[in-house]
Length: 422
View 1: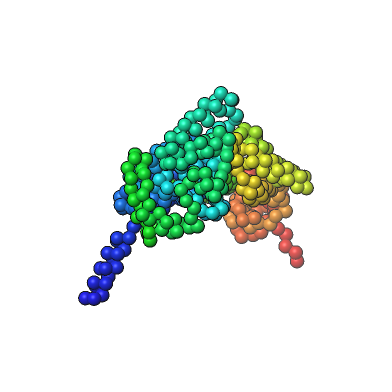
View 2 (view 1 turned 90 degrees about the vertical axis):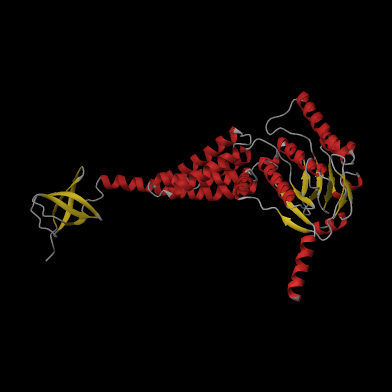
């Protein structure tokens, strides 16, 4: 009885403890980020959570996606806490808008934020267009920052002058509400704090000792989020090309072709949302061509080295956009070197097989010893080099006797009995 009562008390205390739903915004902000944030907010509302903790570590992303997320944050029924973490992380560009839109903006030591000047994914903006885009972004940011009681004039400098701030500078300039070394300390410090929601309502936070429940993205969200990175897309595309090539050179394997096709399409879907530099595409095609020539001609590695250089440069130039959207040098090298070795190896096998077939058709079977599987009188079947052949002998040959190939006429072999030494 006492045990049951104790269990009920523990369950009651556990159910009474506040719950905070935590969701991560890592990497670039994209349409899938909107979906993840939206689902996390829905979960928090269903479970009557005390708050949603958005962990920010992003170089920025698409402006349209940031506007959608900001809209969901300011209209959320559950209080939103934006926290730039871990140390060394950042909430740059579009990430700064998300930080300022939250009911509480916080940073961990060793982080930075700001640099929110809009940029085009490709090309350069003319002065008139840049002015229009900056004015629009500045007005949007001022409306958010003013509502949250932060310093709108300094916040606007992140758009006009691409200014960035450390966590201490952001706190001193009233761009954030607090610093905290970890999220548990952050929640403890926020307990009992009264915040003003975006619609003007006041609400008191109850977050001391809160249970932090991580939002778990669905399999679909995880796949789309991973593929959204151009670096991942480039890797998938390279693997897909290899798989498709193996299927073409060895028809009937099926598995490499199926997997290669899937990976290639996933890679193309990732790169399709970013602007492509056609010089980069040309360099990639040149690199692959040089790998083929290296396998076919003797160049002592010069063609292979040139192909590797062309492919690395092509990968670096492939995406025509800000640095955060481009393929990293480490990714280019990690893909190019194995791709070059595998491609040249497969090409060498293909060329050697082609040469062997040519030798076979022009006398590769001459003087080979086979066995008559039927009587040759004068025609019949023989077995040579693991294959069945039609054969014709000028001298009758009994079944099971050994014969020697003396000529080839199309698909028929001319043979004679093998003379045994006495």
